[in-house]
Length: 473
Ligand code: FAD
Image 1: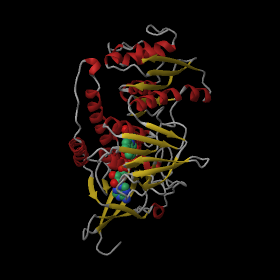
Image 2: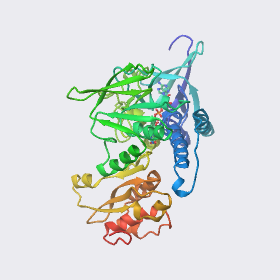
Image 3: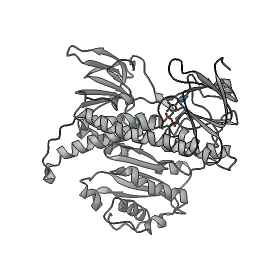
Image 4: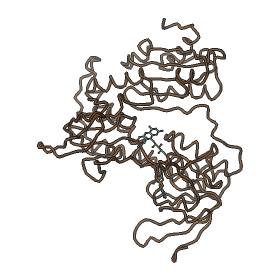
């Protein structure tokens, strides 16, 4: 113990108050365990403060401005002016409401909240340095620990986040003015959500991506629709180019330099450069090795299907434990960790984890694609409903997109779904539930869906997979 430390003890020490950590802490407290949650910055982690929630708030604001200004064909004439400072203030209000809600929920469930930065001393002790000069520190002895320290954006050589014009996604969510020209390095889901947002806010957006397309894990027909819509919004794509450096331009802006694998160089004039090339685990300062915790070659903490690290009484959940780096996956892992510690037979036994991309239109996926089902040895049957044949989609002025379900031909068990279209992030929940319940095509097909809704496309895709489509041929 360091001189001046206060020593305390707890049954469960949770490090990090994001969606992995705070959910784990609440569940552990509900299990009757004495639980302490240490958070060094703000409750809610990346998700609430600089990820899921703020990005979706700006997607709503930018979408509203764009739609209002582009609805003359519907008889709506408007020329909306965006006050970015006001939009960010509204977004901050949403964030504050949620983060203070997390703090209240933790307290109401009896979780001891300790602000500060935790690091391991050994496999049963952590030291928490309280923020600020003279704030002191404390030693916490724990029986079990849950590491939920999350992730941060990957920085690439030549693009120092300390520079004012080099943005992380967090900077892009806090800007109180819209740059005239935004260069985005990386066409993954964070890059594409922000490309759509800023294009709708009026910026000229240029995306450079090393691969030959956006949204690498998704199927071609899914990506094509999102890319086409982004292009219609004016987003310019340059594939097969890696960002190499930036330089100052004569016009007061900057030049984003790129290079192909063959060494061909290009430059693009920009005012800000958003680097969105992936996220890396946060373990610096945590000293996991002092507790015997093992990390892989990229720094992610290795865990088993019960979220245990190499040290059985220490668990790791969420982004720090690697893919899937999604908030809802982090929360589920947090619940499993707490229940395992409480002695319950919990494990990560999900059949499928849904994922959503909040581009325009949205993407919602769960489980296997047709190709993955083939690879896994199934004989898949596929049903697809184009949204242009769905009444509600047309009343929303949406014609592009589809719902596709993948099932096993022999048993009709649902295996997966791919949805592109408005509210795809919501629609996918029905199919995630179906997969989890072991539903068959006939269960979805036999369920009456409300008319007129987008969910009828889910129904129709299941009906189509059975060869009985009414609204498509
Ligand atoms: P985090 O949320 O990163 O929380 C970790 C917490 O630990 C932080 O609060 C940090 O301050 C704290 N901490 C770290 N080290 C210490 C320490 N030593 N001591 C004390 N505290 C510490 N996911 C989705 O599912 N849907 C989305 O739409 C979505 N959109 C996103 C948009 C953006 C722009 C970004 C960046 C991410 C998005 N994500 C989304 C991903 C999502 O935010 C993460 O998967 C999620 O936050 C991971 O939760 P976590 O609890 O593992 O970590």
